[in-house]
Figure 1 (tube, rainbow, N blue to C red):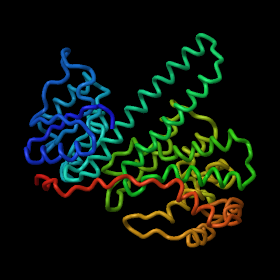
Figure 2 (figure 1 turned 45 degrees about the horizontal axis):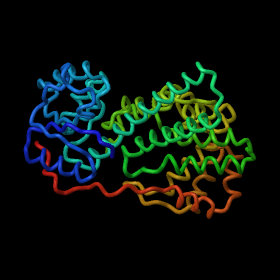
Figure 3 (figure 1 turned 180 degrees about the vertical axis):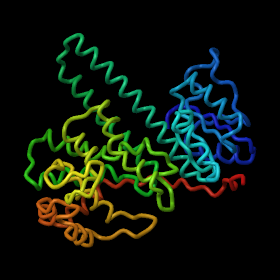
Figure 4 (figure 1 turned 45 degrees about the vertical axis):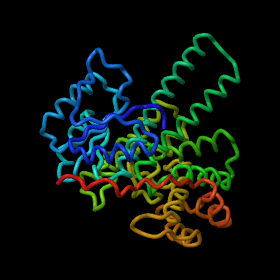
Length: 365
């Protein structure tokens, strides 16, 4: 963690102390308060605090009006709301309005920690992207052609993209590392299909890395909902390819990257979304990614099922050849030994440290 300071606002002294201790153990500097102080005036330093973690027992209470004023004064201040499930629906309009940035359960330390990491990395992304844009602008203005500087900017972009997807993956501890794994699977599978252009291969890897970028705009109340989604919630989920496409095109977007982000949920038989594209109307890189994504999903642990081995994954992919997947890509995948994919998983999988903490008291009812 960096030197950022989080302001924790929680009425309960016991919960305030426990949550502050939990975060500080993980290298996060915390200032705690019983109620929301005046931190938006002209005398307030622009970077203090760097993030707000606030308990909201009632969305109709005065705290929401105070938060709205605060966001008007400091629109870039990340606000994470700690809200119980029975009050979550009332808070969602404020999420849509931009008064708050994330909604998490007050008794879920892992979710709170993940939300803090998401906002920290998202802020780093925005800072780095702004710095890159300014550097590029100066280079164009001065007609610079320094190759070394260009390579440094490219490295910054790579770090920015990886940090962005790390932030997204951290919203769900169970799928952490998914983006890096499918990026490598897609790169290797593209090579197996005869793609040799290094730029195209690199763009396929980047597109796979960023495929779920749009989910950063989907509320946790939908993304992490334990039960089945309503029709309205499912429609919001189905918007994430277009949301991701719109978000990433402002950072760095080339054809293969955009095609994967926008079309990674299209199916070969035309039953996918968002456009119901069929067969070769789906860009090749998106068809490649579909196989890579399913391979990782089947061979990864999920709370609702155990992971399967790569042999079982191969049978499942073959079974859906011609419906979900392009048969030509399935054939290329099957021509490769399972050990290739197992090695990639071993090399790319990353585990975050355990963040569960039983010391937090139960949330207020």
